[in-house]
Length: 336
Length: 82
Image 1 (cartoon, one colour):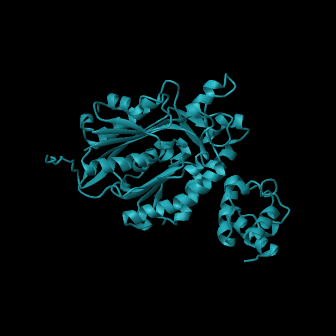
Image 2 (spheres, each protein chain N blue to C red; image 1 turned 180 degrees about the horizontal axis):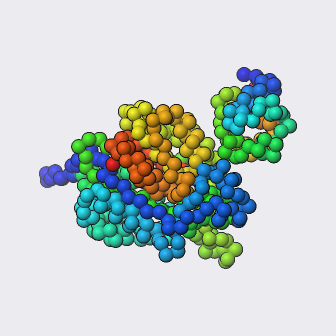
Image 3 (tube, rainbow over the protein chains, first blue to last red; image 1 turned 120 degrees about the vertical axis):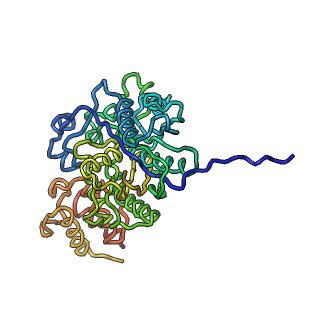
């Protein structure tokens, strides 16, 4: 019997980000508001993290609400209809249920139903994983327009007395519409993981431990080994960032912006130093007033950069996400 | 390559100065990084990584917490470089 030849999908030659959207928590939380339980002060927090205020969402503002708000802005600015979206990818670590996905609900609420929709669990690298997948889908023909979202309500998983990470955390969502392009708009992604440091940052205990703890085990919250994460986030990620530039075929002086995951201002500052970025490169520092929003931080920071510096549109941005896993992803994109 | 205590102290003092601005002549073996020099955990890690490069040694994360004083760090580096 002769085997029939299967039809395959063929996609666009290139892809690019059409637009980004943003939604932040509705509450502004100062350092003084949270300093008490960690026996700290505004000065201590600013000096160690660069965070002056962080945005957190009130009880009635859910992670889905923020994801939908960010997505709607991105879709409108992209100039497409929601029913043209072929895939919805939501990176999150704060979906309050293990299943179903946040993405399926977001797809329904933005009008992208019945697009395939699923969540990505890659913590602070998740948005870059989403952009990598969107680029691949579009160029393979699996999708024409992809909605990529990073959405977090990390205040649900912050412990007021934790001195390792909780005081950094904020709530928000950032979204991007990715579609076909006449020119290369997303470079080859450099991504990976290092499970040998699985314990360096993440939840302090599991749902099962909470369930079986008979009230003696607290609600699981985030914590980190700060020094281990700092060393990895700066010196190992600087190597990844340089590889991403090499893969893109560009040099740092050709960048318009550097958008690292907004983990901690000290990481951002040391990272920029290690990369020896020229002064012409704008560095995203959204963490100062938003806090660390994990998967949402890169699109939120991008959105702010473009709002405050519209002249960056069309320029090149190096974006790099890194976090719990440990996982990382970096690519150079043309700013919408 | 064997390094003397004096060589390492001098080099480490420069690294501490680069990171924190603390005058090198105040950085002595008996000084505590946290209590006397007021160096936080992030600056400490920056100094550690720069010391690894400067002295060509490895200082794993789990050992960093044991380096309470400048003398602890100098002794660690002298032994690691021997």
